[in-house]
Length: 99
View: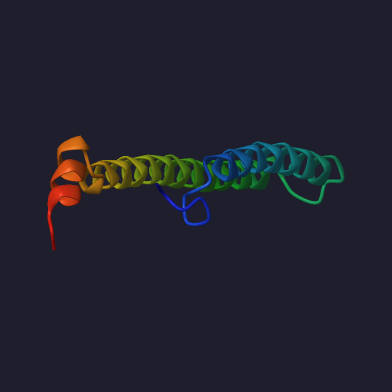
C-alpha cells in the first residue's frame, strides 16, 4: 500500500485553486481602488488585469498538470503494488517449499 506521507495531497491542490480564486478577487479590488484614487490610468488597469490573467492561466495549467501527474503516479504505484502482491498460488507454493 502507498505511504500516505509520500502520497500527493489532492486536497492541497484544491486549496491552491481556492487561493487562486481569492487572489483574483483581491487583485480586482486592489485595481479598482487604484483606479478610484486615480493612482493608475484605465490603460494601466487593463494592462495589469491582462498580465494577471496570463499569470492566472499559467497557474491553472500547472495545477491541472500536477493533478494529472499525481493521478498517473497513484495509478502506477497501485499497479506496481498489485504486481508484487502474493496470490493464492504463490502462497501455496511458498508454504510447501521446504527451503
